Image (cartoon, rainbow, N blue to C red):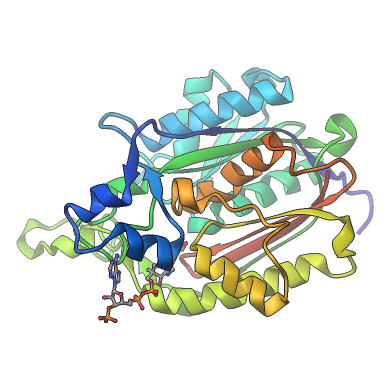
Length: 328
Ligand code: UT7
C-alpha cells in the first residue's frame, strides 16, 4: 500500500497506585507463600488501588504524563482509545471519563482485548493517523483488576496488579520518534472461556435469585493459558524480527504475564533475556497496562536507543494477541 502516513510515538507516561501488596501480605489470607509465587511467576509485589480510585483515574494520570512528554495539550487530541477490561462501569467507556478529566473534546472509546488492549488501541490509533483521520491520538492501557479478583483464590489473586500506561501517537514526520513499522492483531475465540469474568454481561446478568459468587470474579484456567502464552509470545517475536538483524534490536517489551512464560518463549527462540524488558517482579500482571508501563520504564532507563528496533508483543483473554515492530 502507498500514500499511508507512518505513525510514531511522541511521548509516554504511566500511573501506578501507591499501595504495594507483597506476597507475604497475600500469604496471610491465601494458602500460598512468597517462595512459591516468586518461583512460579517472578512476582515479588504488585500495586492495588486504594478505595475510591478507579481505572479512569489511573488512565488520566498516565495520559497527563504522556501529554507532557509529547509537549502537547489535551485540546490538541483528535482521538482517545483506552484498552481495558476493568473499567469504572460496564458502560460508558473509560475513554469518555478520561476525555472529561483532561478537558479534551475529541472522540473517545474503549477496546476490549484484555492483555492485548494497549496494542489493539495502538493499532486503532496508528491506523487513524495513517489514514489522515487524526494528527494526535492518546492511547492508554489501564486496569484496576484487583477489584475483580477473588482475593481468596490463590490461582488468580497472586497474579494481577493495577496500573496504567499511555502513549501519544502522531505522524512520524511530526514527532520523529518511535516509528511504527508494522503491526499485527489476532484472535481465537475458541479459547473464550480460558480467562473470563462472567457476571455483568447479558449471559450472566444480575439476578439475586441465582447468585453464584464465583461468577463475580475473574475465572482463570492458568495452565491452559500458560501453554498458549509461551507459544504465542515466541511466534510474535519471530514475526516481528523477520528480516531484522538482532544486533539492530535494542528492546523487546513483552506482556508481563509470568516470568516463567517469558523464559519459556525465549528458550524456544534460543535467546537470553538481556534485550527483554521485565518488570513483573514489581507490578505483577497488569493486563492491558503492562506493555505501555514497561515501554515507559524502558525509555526512562535508557534501554531504547535512537535508530534501533523495539518489539512489543501481548496476548490474553479472548484469546487475543498482537505485536508491533518500531524503530526509535
Ligand atoms: O495475562 C493473561 C492472564 N494470565 C494468565 O492467564 C496466567 C497464565 N498462567 C500462569 O501464570 C500460571 O499458570 C499460574 C501462575 C496461574 C499457575 O502456575 P502453575 O505453575 O501453572 O501452577 P499450576 O496451576 O499447575 O499448579 C501447580 C500446583 C497445584 O498443586 P498440586 O495440584 O500440584 O498439588 C496448585 O494447586 O501449585 C498449586 N498452586 C499454588 N500453590 C501455592 C496454584 N497456585 C498456588 C499458589 N500458591 N498461589
